[in-house]
Each structure stands twice: as structure tokens, then as C-alpha cells.
Length: 167
Image (cartoon, rainbow, N blue to C red; front, side):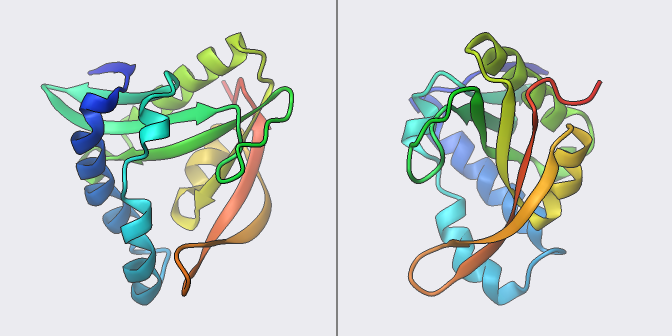
């Protein structure tokens, strides 16, 4: 397996991964009707992340099996707070879940965010991903509803923790 910085050439592969990962991984945590409305918004690769230099993909034998990254600006607003970085758009191929791919992306994010002065991470976690982020050292701050289009509010968990995570 190899982790590397993503670029615009990875757009289709990242979008395909999101399309495989999110429906399968979130199915146990969300009602079908909520997912049906939210997934079209969530499974789109984001150009701003792919060009950020802080979004990563994990490849194995030429296949993208994981992605995720961080930004200094908050999702949606772009607002920056000194020392705070935001984890963004993590996904792992469902066939490869629980094999350390997400942890390797988190570790890469911690390394680069720390080098840029970040001391804390925040993440909007899906209900299904809260245990993963907790293992990385983040704690639940509150449950929030994120608007996805005009007719669905997607329940998410705002989490925060040290950039270094847990050993």
C-alpha cells in the first residue's frame, strides 16, 4: 500500500471510492430515506480538496482504497482558527475496512497538520465513523444536523481532539 497526495487526476477514482464506501459503511447508522437524499451530495469529490496538497489517497495494486485529508479552513465557511485543522472527506473501501487504511491517512494528516502549526483536529463524523475517530483520540462535542440540499438535515457528530491522536 502507498499513501500519496491526491490531485485533480484522482477525481474519478476518489468519487468512485466515495460511491462505494459511504452507502455501505453508513447503511447501519442511517435510515434509508436519509441516505438516499444525502448521498448524492456526499459522494462528490471536491476539487478544493484535491488541489489542497493536504488530501491523500491510499493505493493498493493500482486501486484507490482510501482517501481523506485536512484543511485549515472549516468546511462550508473556510473560517480559520489558529491551531485548529479540520479532517475532511475520509473514506475507505468497504472490502478493506479495519485494515489500518484510515489510521494511515489520519497519521499522515497529523504529521502534515502539525508541521503547519495545528494542535487540534475537528471532524464532522458520520454516526457510523464516531468509533474510528474516538480511537484516533477525538471526542464528541455534540450531534449536529448538516443541511444536504433543501430537504434533508444529515445527523453528524462534531468531534475534536489533539492532532497527535492516541498512540
